[in-house]
Structures are given as structure tokens and as C-alpha cells.
Length: 321
Image (cartoon, rainbow, N blue to C red; front, side, top):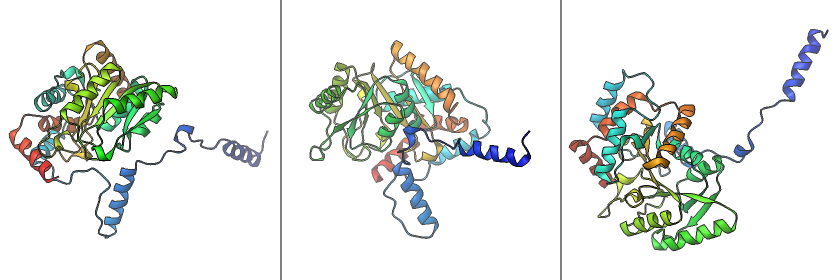
């Protein structure tokens, strides 16, 4: 029998020999730079220091009253929603995409999440292969890929050429990656681009889509800034030209000034492969976030509806941007 002092000593030794051990995949991981800057700016402002915030892509326009009212009405919806999102919202998003960007998606091809950010990560978990990533890029694509166990193949673009992504540049990156033993099967494109602000022309978008089809690359088109295109050039989705292999993501954060609502979506290809991917994403979502917030989903139906007043407000905000 051990006396109490001996028992205490044994417990202390056991605890000392079993410290918290961080996963090796996270030991070199830092916080997202944009979110770190956002918190630093908030702290400076809270301390009364005047600070110009240039580190975070958050719209500063007020939320439109129609959306405020819709969220207030929806506050009573406190139950869990379906994993892929409530049916009226998925219908509204499918109709919105067809109305504004022309790719035809059915509601069954739409999955809703607490922001498009977790969807981008789970897509990289669900899809096979390494990631072709045009550079410069948003700060979270590469960490997402590495967390999902994917190699990141940078595709350098030239500022002097407005960061155009051409079939020649892509083919060179693909050949180099395969020579180095990588297996590129996925590419993320973001137009209008964060951080460069550049946009693909219709011709370049079509060429990228055709190149992706030719090389069996799954294209993830992050269209979170699609509504904020400036000047004469309208955003064109590569899903118009590559519907069987292009996934479109978007959300409320930028155009609707609702980043804190955390509501995003992914629109998947049709056919057997798209259905299989939807099944996998639902399974992942069910184990990670269960469902997007129900009241926000209800309010988002209004955001994606064909409302003249709301559309005019979004366009006016985009012009000021």
C-alpha cells in the first residue's frame, strides 16, 4: 500500500511524463495573418488610437434594413437545420447564380455552411490530389491544403501582365509539379482576386476552364468578390465553360456586408461525380459544424432573392468600393 504522499508523488510523475503534445502538422502553423491584423486593429482602436485598417477584406457598409428585419423575424428558428442547408435557401442560391452568373445549378447541387472558408477546406479534404495555386493568393488557401495533406504547387503570375493565368503558365507549372513527384488534381482560382484586385477576362476564363478540362483538373472558383467587379468588366464564372468539373463558392461576407453572419455556399457539378462529392461533403459537415446557423439561413433567403431594392444597394456599394 502506498501512503498518501507516495500516491501524490506517483500522480505527479504520471502527469509529468504525459504532457500535452502538439500535432506535428500544427507545430509551424500561425494564425491567419488577416484575422491577426483585424484583431490588432480592433485592440488599437479600443485603446483610443486612430488606425487605418488595410489588412482585412471586410465591407464597411451598413447591412441593408431588409436583411436586419429578416434576421429579427427569423430569431425564433432555433432548431438545427439540415446539414446541407434549408431547402428554400438552396433554391434561392441556385436561382441567384443562374440570374447573376448564368451557370445552371439545381438546389440539390448547393451546400450551405458557416462561411465559404470551411467549405474550401472540406473540399480539399474530400477531393483527391495536390493543389495548383496561382500566386499571389489569399492567405488561407495554402494552409487549408497543407492541413488536408495536399502539396501546394505555386503558379507564379506576373504583375506586369495583370496577373493573367494562361494555359502556357499552367502547363509549365503542371509539368514541373509532376517532375517533382506531385499529383496536381485541383486548382483554386479567385476572380476578382484577393489580394491583387485583378480580374480574368472572359477569354482567359474560358481558356482556364478548357485547360482544366483537358488536364482533368477539378477547378474550385472562389467567387466571394463576384458582385464587387468594377468598371465595364463583369465577372464571368468558369462554371459556364466547365460545368462538369467546376465548383463555385461564395457567401454573404463581401457584397452584403455580413461577414459576421458566417454564411457561405458551394455549388457542385451535376452528374454522378457531383452527387458523390455532395455525399462526402455532407458527411464531413455533419461531423464538423452540423449545420449553418438557422436564423441566418432564413435571413439569407432574402439576400439571394430577386429584390430590386437590395440589388441596387449592393451595386451602389460596389461602385463606392
